[in-house]
Amino acid sequence: MEKIKMTTPIVELDGDEMTRHIWQWIKDILICPYVDLKSEYYDLSLVNREKTADQVTVDSANAIKKYGVGVKCATITPNAQRVKEYNLTQMWKSPNGTVRAILDGTVFRAPIMVNGITPYIPTWTQPITIARHAYGDIYKDVEGYVKKDGKAKLVIDDADGHREIEIFDYSKSGGVVMGMHNTDKSITSFARSCFNYALDTCQSLWFATKDTISKTYDHRFKDIFAQIFEEEYKSKFEKAGIEYFYTLIDDAVARVVRSNGGMIWACKNYDGDVMSDMVATAFGSLAMMTSVLVSPDGNYEYEAAHGTVTRHYYKFLKGEETSTNPVATIYAWSGGLRKRGQLDGIKALQDFADKLEKATIDTIEGGYMTGDLASIYKGNAKVVKLNTVDFLKKIAEQLA
Ligand code: NAP
Ligand code: MG
Image (cartoon, rainbow, N blue to C red; front, side):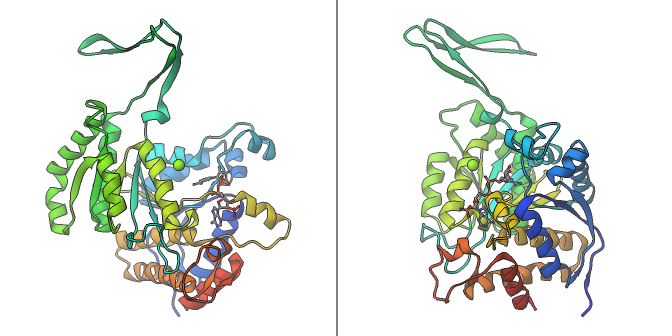
């Protein structure tokens, strides 16, 4: 059989620990037998980030900007313990944070649904995608403690002059205070990424904040979304048969729970952080959650939502058998290859991505799965718990 040819390289960001091995196995067992893989390779392992003073992370993000599509393996974000373990000269920043800052995007997370792994909410028959704004708010806040009889004020200096707004008079009790911000530029890219992703995946977009209480801050998000939608996307949405609407976050929560899924739910940074964990858990497992970073100028970075699965890796190093779930990493590859196929007009590559995903789902539905899924599976098939490599080989049989 002739292998599928690619015309533009996919940017490949390799990573750490268990997922680094899974990365190689997926390429060897599932992709390279069928695709003449053309990739521009960046080694984002912590060892190589140390060696290059993290330049490799910056280079990989710029490569995604150049070619448009990247696939990323999970990577270690170093903490004090990792600094010792890897003998680092610096506590390098989170690679995801660095890539995000260069690409300026929004993170979309969606569960992979399989018969037999049932959502805790039975009406959720289609996946719910969370679009999380990945800049600002409490993640870039400043905080302080104010003693009794103190005062806290908001001071603004801009072209309109100098204003001091009292936040609170602590005459009866000491307490806490917080200042946070966001920018029109970042909110605008967030909005565009959401509208583009909705069109790309042909799903309606819901957006919710607490604008009734936060009449300037949250209201600004609402206004920017509304303006961009009216000016740039309204007719495209009508043509695609999808809708955009804004509602209050309380109402969105109630509606999402009662819905059948199948929509994108755009959330401010904190809401998205919390809601994506809630949605992933309610759908079954973090190991079955895909994640893609979409930039406003149309660059894509696909990855799994989970980390490097350190606990399994240490067992693997001791020679013990591991049954780590590779599904989200397979979907990172299929997502990236499909997007490459779409951008380059290579139908065979798009079809391959579809078939790879179908083979993965069919394998699980046939009863063959990793340990994490075996423990929550409620379907009719007889369950066979496999180690990671045997599971990948089963998918390969199905794919063949
Ligand atoms: P993790 O790697 O996601 O693993 C946490 C636990 O979740 C695992 O111990 C395992 O539970 C379960 N799990 C996660 N993925 C699984 C899979 N594919 N198959 C089966 N079980 C899975 O999170 P972590 O242990 O907090 O972080 C480990 C490292 O990953 C850290 O260095 C962190 O910096 C990094 N990280 C990277 C990313 C990223 O690159 N996007 C994201 C998060 C974390 P059991 O042990 O109970 O089986
Ligand atoms: Mg979270």
